[in-house]
Length: 161
Ligand code: ZN
Image (cartoon, rainbow, N blue to C red):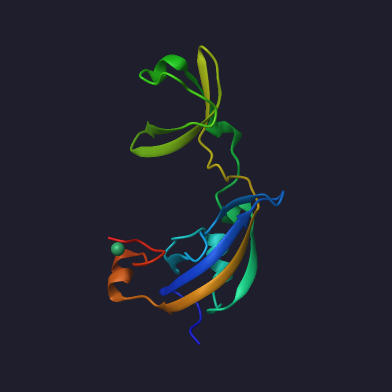
C-alpha cells in the first residue's frame, strides 16, 4: 500500500474545528482536497502528521498555532486614518482589504471603525488558534512529473488549469 511521503499526491476529507469545537471549515461532501506532500501546500503541523499514512486511514491532527497559521501578534493590529480608505463608502468590521507595504501584499481584517480611525488586524484569521483536523485519507498516489514541476496536484480537489 502506498504511504504518504515526499512527492505523494494525497486526497483527504477534513473537518476543521477550533478550541471551542466550532467547525471553521470542512471539505464539501464527496469532494476531498488534494495536495502534494512535502511542497508546503498545507500547513506544516498538518502535513507532518499525515506522513506515513495511507488511503483509508482516519486520524485527528491537533495543530498548535506555531505549526499552523502563526501566533497572534498584537503589533499587527493598527489604526489607520479613515481618509486612507477613500473610495470605500461603507466600512464594516469583518471586511477584508489588501494592504501593500513594500512589495508585500497583506490581507487585513477590519476590527473596528469610527469616523476618523479604522482599526485593522493583519493577523491571519486563524492565527493564535489551536486547530483540530479530523481527517480521512481517500487516496495516495505518486505525483506525475508535471505535478512535481508545478508544485501542486492537478485534477479533482487540486488545481485545475
Ligand atoms: Zn499546475
